[in-house]
Amino acid sequence: MDYNAGLVVAGSAEGYVRSSDADGLRSDYALDPDVGPAQANVLLHVVRDVQAARWFFGCQVAPVAVVAADLAERAAPGTATPD
Image 1: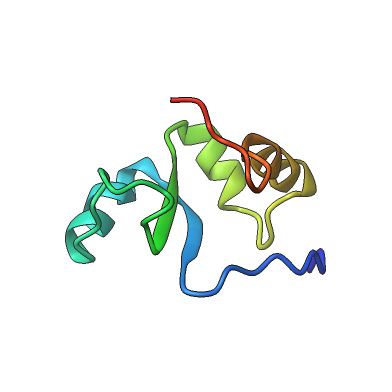
Image 2: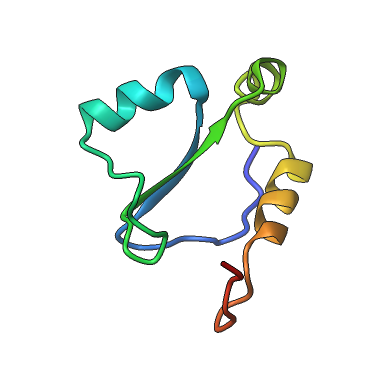
């Protein structure tokens, strides 16, 4: 399934990772958790809940509700995000 949303950001990657895999990825790829989203070229969202991860990673394409919630969390272009 493809939502044909046309959402593409050149020069960066974003994805979800199980919490059990996060430390290994950080080490293997020298990821710095202290780099902010504006400077990062990789942004990983860590799924900490085991049951949520089992459900989420069992899908080939993220369910539309997850995509909508993820996009809703982001600030609109040109707006400041709260600290």
